[in-house]
Image (cartoon, rainbow, N blue to C red; front, side):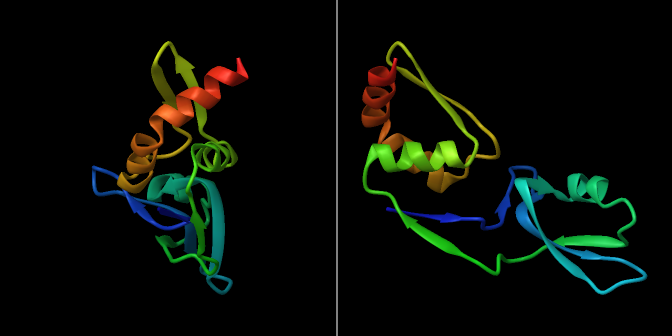
Length: 122
């Protein structure tokens, strides 16, 4: 399976969530910015209060990561700011950002392996 990093996502409410935003100002050229963690329109406007507008844009650097093992998934999730732990036989994920369908599918398909790794770290 592959996971695409830094792509735009849409929350259930329809609000776009993105790492990349095009920010427009009245006195300078538009600026493309990267924001971590991924943010919504109101969050980006709050960070850039003098901006006239902001809109999500595609990443200039799309990176594709192949995830074949539970360890690769766990490493990628930790790098992305997710807190992953185990409680008995349950996997707990404290989300740093929204969990899209692709990530949810990866977690589900590697759940047993993730639990084994996390138990071995205790």
